[in-house]
Image (cartoon, rainbow, N blue to C red; front, side, top):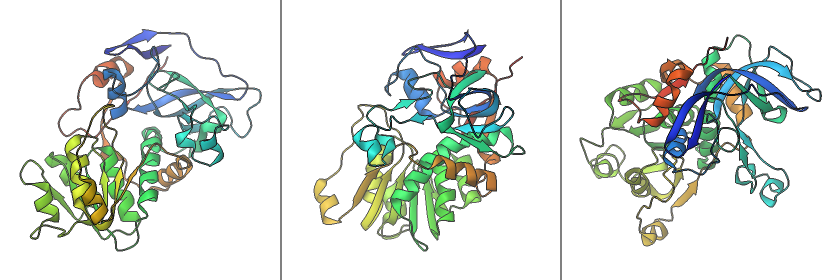
Length: 342
């Protein structure tokens, strides 16, 4: 079969490899769609730990083509989404239910071969059935939506809350929708790209800000800003130094900052501990999708989350390596790799 192989940092290419075989408790899934994530670009640049050579791709869905002899509850022909994060179930974090912090985490598309291929092997415990009539591309959004759900859970948004989202990529735009569903009445998103600002407002943001045109701190949290004093909850969804630093300054006194964006490993940001102390800010990291993948799949199946407008383009496997090795195009939200197996 064809698969995109990350062979080393800075080296990625389409290759012919052996078609995998499902083990006793595994499913062989024919990939229908796999999303390109910022983490895939971090892997390419050596900014996120992984184990090359490996086939990346952790946001995928597809059709079961074969099942192992110990599998139950699944059948050939089922459409499934895969939770890529395989916890060991034995370490102290797993025993505490914090599977995203597993000491032995083995992630599909990071540590073992993933979805930028015609087929992937998926443990049955990581698979969730999707409706047969769901558009094939929608299943690829379950993993990023699950990550956003974890962030919103940590934020504990209450009806009537105010929310700021920093970053207008797919994570920011999904977070806008979840914040609205959670009852936030004021949602402000900051991003440089006009098309993303317009999309955010169409999806539920009550206002948007262009950080290239105005100082974000003044424009949102200043005395004459859109939300003087800051918001109850600030989501950092861009994974860059500026927005990490802005997030601390845009939360109101007693507010919560949730770091959702994946920054390059080793990046540093500055803040004043006295400011966090004096304003009693709660700053939390939101890592992966612990126990949220099923909820994400059900939300997407329900139609409560707008997906189609988040898809910028679909490309075949032959173009995937080039997409991963280069920055997103202006205005691009989500690129999906759609294999076409023989």
